[in-house]
Image 1 (cartoon, rainbow, N blue to C red):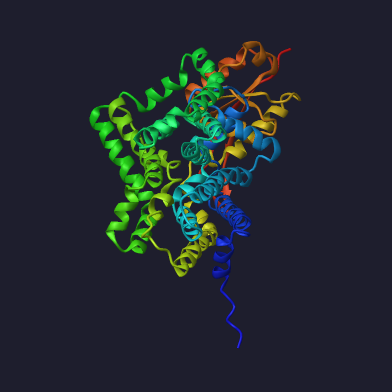
Image 2 (tube, helix red, strand yellow; image 1 turned 90 degrees about the horizontal axis):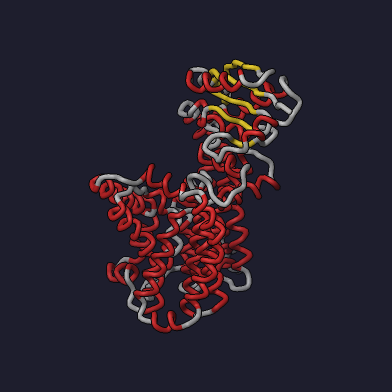
Length: 501
C-alpha cells in the first residue's frame, strides 16, 4: 500500500526548508501575500478614498526636492518613480504600499538565515505576517511604511559588517543608514541603537579597530551631504515642523506618550508573543530569548532592543510625544530574538499550523473585504472620499475656461492634495509646498478649490480672480454613491484663474 500523499501545507513546508527550493518558494509566497492584501485594501477601503497621508505624498512627488516641510524626500521620490510607470489608481497605490512590508519580510527572511535553522525561519516569517504593521497598517503608504524595508536592510548589513568586518557590508550599512534618514528622521533611533549594540558587545575592540565602522560612517555621511545642504538652506524647516507638532510638551504629557508607545507596541506584537510563549513551554527559554548569553545572539538582541527603546529616552529628555505606530519598522529581529534559543525546538507540525494561519488570515480578510467596505461606508470624510470626483469637476471647469494644461492647484489644504492626486493633468500643489515663482503662476494660471462653507478660502480665491481677467467661479455639489447608497453631499467652489501670457 502506497504512503498517503502529504498535505498541501506539508508540501509547502518542505519547499520552504529545502535549500534548493526555499528561495523560489518564499518569493512566490510573498508575491501571493502582496496580491491578497492589495486586493483587500482596494475593496475594503473603496468607500473611503485614499488617505490624506497618501495624497500628500503624491503632491510632494510633483515637486521633486531634497526635502519637504514635514519630512525628508525618499517617500515622495518612490511615489514619483512608481506612478511614472503605473497608472494613478487606488489598486496601484495599495500595491506600492504592500511592497514595502513584503520587501521587509523578504529581508527578514534573509537575515534569519544567519541565526535560525530552516524550520525556525519558516516559523519566524509566519509570525511576522501576524503583526498588523505588515498588512493592515502598511496599506497606508507614508514615511513610516517606507522605513520598514530600509530598517530591515540596514540592520542586516550592519550585523554582517560587525560579524565579518567586511568592507562591502560596511558600505552597504552606510547606504542603508543614509536611505533610512532620507525616509524619516525617526531613523536616528535605529542608527543610535546600532551604535549602542556595537558598544555593548564584548568584541567591540575588534570591530572599531577595523575599517568597517569608518567605512559605514563615511558612506553614510557622503550620501547625506545633499540633504544636509538642503536642510541648511531651508533653515531646518523639517525640524521646526516636528518640534511645533510633537515637541515642547510637559513632562507628564511626554511620559504618558511613552507609556502609550510601549503598551501599543507590545499590543501590536501580542499574538506572536503568545504563540511563542505557548510553543516554548518553559520560562527559562523565554528569558534566554530576551537577553542571550552568547555573543552573536546578544548582539542581535541589543540591535533589537536599543532602536525600540531609545525613543522612550528621547521623548522624556526632549519633552516630545511619540506613538506606537512609529515602531512599525523596528520588528525585523523579533523572530531572531524569540526563536534563537537552542532549547527552543520547533516541530514540523507546529510549522505547518503556523503556515496555515498565515495563509488563511489574508484569504479570510479578502473574503470579508466587501462586508468591511459596506459597514464602513458611512464613516468617511466626504472631502477625502469625494477627492476623485472633485478633481474631475476641477478638470472640467478648467477646460471650460481655457485649453491650456492645468499646472497649479491651490485653495483649502484639505482639498488640494486630493485634487492634485487625481487631476488628469498632474498639477502641482500651491499649499504646504514652497511657493513657485510668481511669474510661473501668472503665466500658467491656477485652479483654487474651497468648501463652499469656508468663507476665508472663498474670499482669498475671489481676490486672486479679480486680479486676472477672464477668471471664472464655479459652484457645485458632489455626492458620492457607494454600492447603491448616497454619501453626504458637499458643496464646493472652484475658481479658475486662466493663464496670462
